[in-house]
Amino acid sequence: MDDRAVVSWVVRRWWLVLLVALDAMLIAYLVADYQPRVYESTASYLVRLNAGAVADKSIISAVDTLSNRPEIVSTYASVATSRAVREQAAADIGVPGDQLLDYQVRSRVVPGTNTLEIAVRGDEPATVASFANAIGERTRATSGSLYTIYTLEPLDAAFARAWPTSPNVQFDVALAGGLGLLLGVVLAALLGYLRRPIEHSVQGILDEETGLFEKRYFSLRLREEMARAKRAGYPLSVAMIEIDRSDKLAGISPEVRGLALQQLGRSVESTLRDTGLAARIDERIIAVMLPETTAVSARDILAEVTGQLASRLGLDCTVGITVYRDTGNEQSKLLARATKALEESAADSTVASVRAFSGNGSQRVQSAAG
Image (cartoon, rainbow, N blue to C red; front, side, top):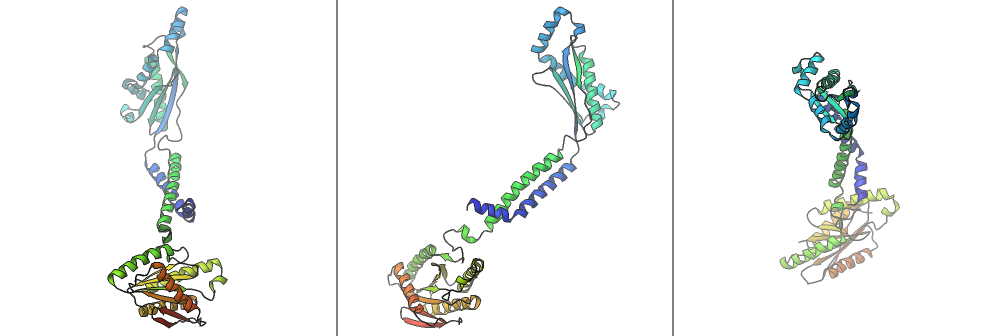
């Protein structure tokens, strides 16, 4: 399996990739739409020196202290999240405190600065903004008694946002679309792998054009069957079929020829069924192995095979048959005998017939081709 095959599987199933991506986006939208909306607003304040409360000679010392003591600003951040400040801020905006229990208040110091941010999260954007600003003002008022030489000065007031912070529908849908595309590609590739022609899963065993076995696999199986035939003492018939003696397939388009070869392979396999094994060992030669089959039975089986090729595809075929009977012959010699039988049959000028040769002589098998 190479990269081009995977790309081909995905391209052929582009609709599956698109469908999975769209489904993922739709599911993400529905899930996000079902979740409660959460809004967030942030108010920011600057911790600075209260010049009016510090003598001139103390200003430098106060500034130095503020710069080198980050816990001063952190104290203001802690005040902002205190329960007392939350209750006072809720009263300031005229909302009962128990209605804001689910509202989250977070304060933090911006790293490297003396800036304090107060963020509030809740389900009502206007209430969230008002609550954040009220907490900021209450923090200012409370902090005045903590450090008189410092003060909180408003920077940016919180405002009601039109879009919720959570769920982020656009981000969720976009992320789901990307993951859906990835999943669709994986599914398309997997489906292509599972539905690929069987020759890709057993590369080197099946012929790509006909779907019959290749010569190498045929040789391996023939060696095994010869050993079995020798042990059990049963006959083993081997035949060579020359297809398309009239070169009918040579004069058609490659597409039609490919379809014809596929049908040829199916015809041979369906006719042989469980009685034997066929392999394409050359451009126009098919080898057939028939275990536990005598020459007479092989003749009848191959007559049916060639008859099917003649009736379905109009192909003129020649057949040569030989039989292995535990003579100790090597595989190459057995195949050579079958090839010789085929050559003798091909020498017959009667194209409309098939002559099958066995070890005991020749027999003519009539074919439907004319």
